[in-house]
Length: 236
Ligand SMILES: Cc1cc2nc3c(=O)[nH]c(=O)nc-3n(C[C@H](O)[C@H](O)[C@H](O)COP(=O)(O)OP(=O)(O)OC[C@H]3O[C@@H](n4cnc5c(N)ncnc54)[C@H](O)[C@@H]3O)c2cc1C
Figure 1 (cartoon, rainbow, N blue to C red):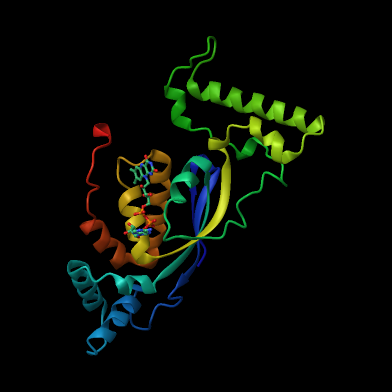
Figure 2: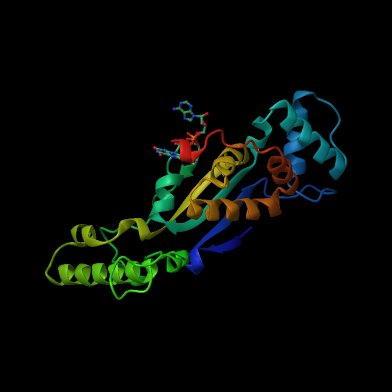
């Protein structure tokens, strides 16, 4: 597999690079059949024969809270997202991170293409006289920061120290994360919620959309049984 969704106005993306089970079993139309038939080991009963049986059985697993068969399905995502999103993904300890691909500001130079500037900031006014919107002001801040960064490099400051002048939350980073379907459900329940920050929601929605193409029944059942997050941000 190599399925991709562009994110963050084209500056970022999410790709599913690899998946276990790698094949759809003969006679079925999705990898969900593997999860369902793996779960059959417990009861040692006859293998499921068709897609409707698979769907109904997965529904039962959900109803019972018997989630461990979903841990047999594993997805490897390549993600490019702004640092503000990574600071939230990183809290999910059930993800396995590569961190080797996350760009090193010690060795590589940052350029203007690597800053995420949300389009929606154009609908907020600027706090700087003569500038049209918050978006324009943020663009100018990034330009000025990059100018100062270059000046520092020219003055011989090492890259690892010159980067202190950059607005780091906007910077785009790329990394690989691997997660099983059960833990992905947990992540999606928290991060597709309308109260999650819009940027992580954009990523979570993208991850769910791509995962749906590989595990359509599991994602359908998950979406229908998703538990609402039990708090209201305004009350915190
Ligand atoms: C809307 C929203 C707002 C948030 N706001 C804040 C905030 O203001 N500040 C902040 O710091 N964080 C915040 N977070 C992050 C949140 O506290 C979690 O760290 C993050 O969502 C990861 O969730 P998790 O621990 O359940 O997931 P994972 O780390 O992936 O863990 C999955 C599950 O494994 C179990 N588990 C894993 N490790 C342990 C362990 N050591 N002990 C016990 N059980 C474990 C738990 O059941 C856990 O739910 C926010 C999250 C959301 C969704």
